[in-house]
Image (cartoon, rainbow, N blue to C red):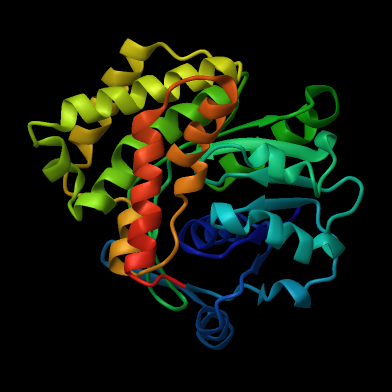
Length: 309
């Protein structure tokens, strides 16, 4: 299977590495010059615990790729998805399936502008990874992947084939009967942790240990659940609270990706695809989302204070 990883950051490198090691024909696509040059010169270096492996894997800028592929797996930042799909349209033919494994909400609406619905596969993953330096990816831990074709009649067979390919690579994939539920559940976890940690410049444990955390987190969850219901995704609010608090206890020392982007690296965040998406949809549906709206405004204010570019 010819697979293009669109967005060769930490997660893109992880998937590209594992799929290539399993014998798949994989190319990486990215726009970070130093990262591209490092991989071309030294190979992709993968650090897993005390071991380091080096893998020769092709990496290109979007404008450099022209050979059609069977599958594109998107791992861009949320705000870069449409731009990436536009730039790599030469490799997407009428049967190419595009798999979205991005964090956040509403990506199916972006994808529909560039890819026929019959070729869209939505997914969610809880694998983790990091970038130590250009060309050097850091692995660790285990995870899972869930995917589901937007149009099952035309897309399920290839999606199930991709599940088998991912499992050969050790990615613990499964075909979901309700992937939007899983996407919204993960987004709700991120919506309670990412922005709060970024705004307060703290890790998850520090935020959740405050006396105000429960009131803030519970209200964010309520807003996510209410908007999800209007999007046709049924989430039990009590179960969601239990899921969030259980997850927070497992990663207390972790600084979420939004903190890494904003506070550590002064990069734009994905807030508009998490709390911002909920606030926007809440306004459209007439559902009050005051916490998500305020959090979104504060993150954008912080981006301006830090002069993020």
